[in-house]
Amino acid sequence: MKIPTYDDMLAARARITPHIHRTPVLTSSFLDDLTGAELFFKCENFQKAGAFKVRGACNAVFGLPDDMLEKGVATHSSGNHALSLSYAAGRRGIPCHVVMPRTAPQAKKDAVIGYGGTITECEPSTSSREEVFAEVHARTGADFVHPYNDARVIAGQGTCSAELMEQVEGLDAVVAPIGGGGMISGTCLTLSHDAPDVKIYAAEPEQADDAARSFRAGRIIADDAPVTVADGLKVPLKDLTWHFVKNHVTNILTASEAEIIDAMKLIWKRMKIVMEPSSAVPLAMILKNREIFAGKRVGIIITGGNVDLDALPWMEK
Amino acid sequence: MKIPTYDDMLAARARITPHIHRTPVLTSSFLDDLTGAELFFKCENFQKAGAFKVRGACNAVFGLPDDMLEKGVATHSSGNHALSLSYAAGRRGIPCHVVMPRTAPQAKKDAVIGYGGTITECEPSTSSREEVFAEVHARTGADFVHPYNDARVIAGQGTCSAELMEQVEGLDAVVAPIGGGGMISGTCLTLSHDAPDVKIYAAEPEQADDAARSFRAGRIIADDAPVTVADGLKVPLKDLTWHFVKNHVTNILTASEAEIIDAMKLIWKRMKIVMEPSSAVPLAMILKNREIFAGKRVGIIITGGNVDLDALPWMEK
Image 1 (cartoon, rainbow over the protein chains, first blue to last red):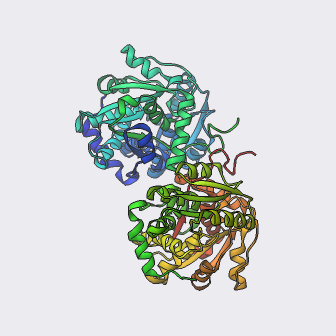
Image 2: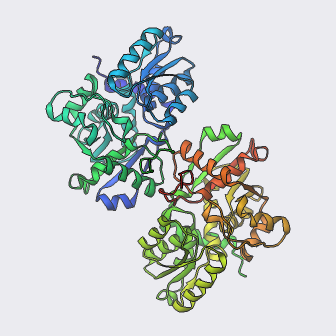
């Protein structure tokens, strides 16, 4: 297990800057009034390929040694890592092989293909995903860029908090959603060096709360196929991300499906931005834990915006 | 008829600056590739009260003489002017009476009430609106702030282009949607002084094309109750706005309902912003008139973002 360092994050930042956006931080006086906190939304939904995942993907792809360029990269992903890796590989002109659940949003599948990636479908469970991926990996010989349990990826995600700390002074806390823990680990990597007093909270769907249970149990607990509207957060912690969660996260708190959908709609309505259900989990969690955040300056990572506009969670099925 | 001057726009800018946002300009490499132009989206969907209309409304409300403060302001509006005037009146602490079509989006009615305005409903036709308004106006004695045919309102809307010209260098053209013509008139007011070589295009729904027909006929043509998804653009030109359209607009071009909805969805999907059908008419028009805009630097006014999330135009009825 190679744990990424702060210097790896700095190297990632230098490497990926030409290929990504420095995303804006938005505020909302309405949501400040509602929560009693000062909220600063780091809008990775405006990021290249529509999600923060492009940071880690670009770091892996643009750091790939020359003798691996012909075989390219491969991964499995519930969506945003898939299209981010395809985007990065497309920019470097190398092959990208992606295993995606057949139930992944069509918008994400279309985007992977649009960037030049090749999709192999699996069933929507961790076990099926890993089995199908093993076959693709063996067949192609491509370099495996894990969606989160990869030092290159975590170092890349850490660049998001580095920007946030430059954009907003005096933060008391940063809140990000947690699935496999890539964004949270990158946040821990950067803040534990740059701002060790800033508390780090992870927000998780109640219906996919394996990270919260792991945190309380002191060991990784993995569910096979959780069901939640926050489709980016269904995957379990792995050894590298568990290292950061265990050592640097203040707490992991959850929100229900209805709370997540309400928070998502509230952000769309008041902030006029398109973002994914996963990105609404932090606000949903803050709204039900006002006492923790009231009076504080809180950074929130809006992780992505690749939502299927024809299947919004508040539409009739 | 009091035609607003460039100095009126400058005075408006000084007056309203504390009450509005300087909205950002966004770009999209995807949409640039698609159109062959360089597009600069002035995002008034992020504006206070969710639309550019707050500029003109704030100019009228904060310029109101002391002896009118007790009676307040009144207007009729298909939506955004209603809630912008309510917002401005609420900030100054004066009454605001609004006549709205009963078919206006619920999100807009809720916002008017949220800002402290009082709604009287009318039928969705220009004739009914004017009749009901005459009663409200007579009863309250409030100062009538017309949604667009008002020198104070046009001077306020002109501040949007003043910002745009500071934010983007070397524009060849500016495109805005046209309904009653308030935004286009403000654009003409500012650009005819600051940048007379920049061409001004108005974009209009095919199904509410009275401004385009007026432009070709050389006189105002008004339809009573046009039907279009672009609910902010159903109202006719009036003498003041006709003055600016006639003298300064390069052309008025139209787009179909399907083209408007496609362009709206495209902007949501690729730019991750929530905006109204009306705001999509310029991109829809540019996409079908590529030869006019290819190779040009084009400013586009995204006029507002107050859409009803439960009744998006691509949802099943």
